[in-house]
Image (cartoon, rainbow, N blue to C red; front, side):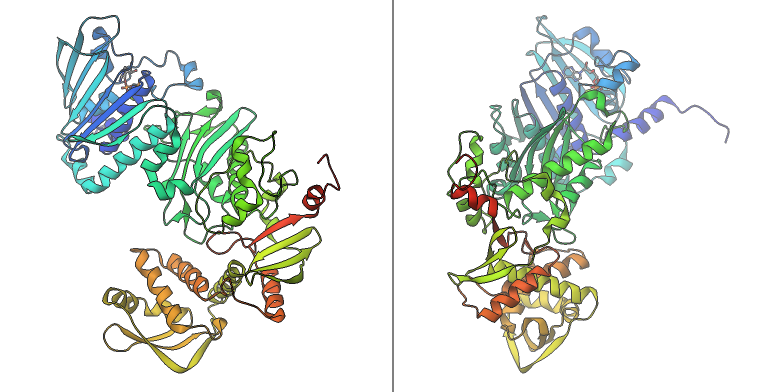
Length: 583
Ligand code: ADP
Ligand code: MG
């Protein structure tokens, strides 16, 4: 075939394919346009997960009637004047492609009125062809209706996922934009009842609950960090709160949702050693940086950006996140300037008082409170993974049958015996597992466990995974299993309890990766079989636990990310006793 220019409708469908992948992409483009128009109120209505209808109404500046035909044309934009403008883009749009693309794969109506005009105007586009322009009555602002998306590109329709999935993408998108722009009122409706409604009063926490549910939202940690003209705000999950994929890691850069960014790698580094294999945090972060420092023109759907000084941004994100995380739990040191009994000081911000000792102890259960990362409690030197190792500790004893006390060269350590033992068992088990050598120990008398039918089925499918961990389990009648051997590591722990812990784990996840199952299985068993709070330990047991903990790679958190210890530095003690400093 000789080279020929593509017919315009073919070219425009190819271009549309880059911008409009699914109903959620339509929602994204339209919401971004509304925000660019300065809207304070944005109503999104969908039908049939957006296939049948996506409608976005805003109270923004509107489009003058005379400009409507241009607005739906490709490469027509009011946001970019010259090529030089490309290098400091402050609007979300600039390519002038969205309306043209959407119009070429749907039946689209744009109705709009500007403040200075008494009447509005409406334009209809069907499959890329401009049908009509007419004068209509309309409120100030813009209303865009997109009907029958992909009606003329059936191949694209086939790629759409189930309604629930497309729907979830739209929900997630609108909720995240609501979070990014808490000063605007968002409403998302399918049919008659709003599924999301925000007040526009600037309160992000309330929106966070809509995004994650109240329980999760309560646990999210607040990030607030600024340095040399870069600012990051938002929320991250504590290390104990994770998902099995990266989908919940979202980033806004200068108000634009960017799905593909090396910054997620910076986040993963910040969580380094705190997460189990195959687990990912939940993050909703907003980065603000001088537009000249970002190139947003590298992806058709603007889903990717480049930074002029990539390393600086990367490191900033990594450090800010790490600081927020450490301030929350794994940091064992109390800041020297902190009042030991949790009282706040005049010089610190209001959130700060929550970082006192009482608070840290209370947080062995993950129940949430937030942390302001501007907290002085974490020095930058703590940011290297190497500082996670422990110095040699001298055991002093056990208190409350729950904590060990030990002395190190740099002060006093209070160790949660349960969390510490969990960590020790976990690392030993994972090491043996990695070496494919988990010593197993036969039980003197095999133990029979009967499980509920659903759990029975789950375990039957996982007998081989259990085998890898040194459990010898055999079916023993309907929903009953006989345990013949256990990992030697667990000594004489209760085999039935171990098996039940495993069942819970398998039940929780639908189809996790094998590697992930294994880490989780190990974490769960270790949790169940570790010594409990309230269990008196002999001095030998205490010492053994401490030594084992010193040998761990990540001794300062349990496998679920909770702290194993609190460190009271010599410096802190001196200040608390008024031996040093002003107080
Ligand atoms: P871009 O946003 O890249 O400029 P679009 O195709 O999304 O391109 O929109 C084209 C133009 O139409 C915009 O530049 C803007 O002038 C106008 N426009 C689109 N949507 C709206 C809206 N909701 N309110 C006001 N103007 C709009
Ligand atoms: Mg746009």
